[in-house]
Image 1 (cartoon, rainbow, N blue to C red):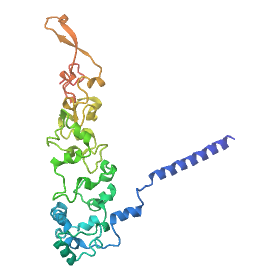
Image 2 (image 1 turned 90 degrees about the vertical axis):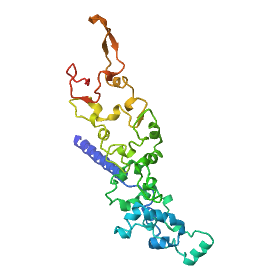
Image 3 (image 1 turned 45 degrees about the vertical axis):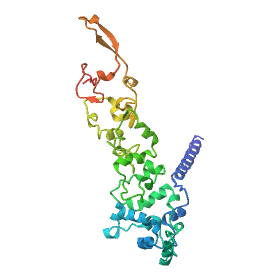
Image 4 (image 1 turned 30 degrees about the vertical axis):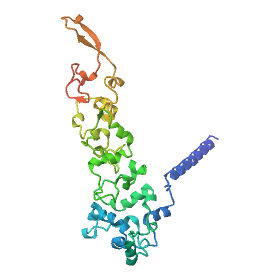
Length: 340
């Protein structure tokens, strides 16, 4: 009887594990936003059209004259032209094959439009509509080429916070905006602040990193294209490693360290701005009292004996414990009080 119960329990356990594993498999299954075939059509363009090349695309379409000039003078257009010996990148690389778009546009039509002061335009409905593409699809158009380009740090892009929050490449790098497609360091903060309004406000606080003064930039600490760090797209694996790139004297190693505080600078400091000095989250001594017991100190009143001393309470821990991050010198007690 006992063996039958054990056998039935074992069978129930096996069935339960099978059901659990089956549920996990369903969780791991990809769930595309739209059917895969439709998604591919969005990226490929009109499958009934043929590639005709930039010359045929732009020869008659005077509405795109300025765009053509900007692209040909841009970093992408100059480096990836046929003369440079690199893979051809042209209008159709992003917009799809264009034979149907220029169908019916003849030299006669172009001349007639010119006489009426009309700019001849192609049929945009036959091309890929970039304005309606999901953010991930727009980025895939760029990644067709840039995944193999070692110049850009995008190997972590798909798992990065920007990609997961539907930010596409063209939100930060508008291809047709001008000659240089790479955002200048002094303009990075303006680009980032378009979305990160709360961080923009933090940089207006009394104690802050000098980003508004162009002495440092958002990408000094953050890697916008994706990062292997635990959070916030940091350029280094941890907050401590990121901060000590500039604040090397705070990194140690020290004989007497400040316990676990040195593992994460943000235990005590705000990262962008704060109302307290030195980007402290809470002013001294209240910051220290969150972890340490308070104590009073002896204060000398000027007399010759110990009776002329009185017990007083400190207002700033750092008046005595000045080496807050760590020290190689023992304190008076010999226990390393970070006093010097």
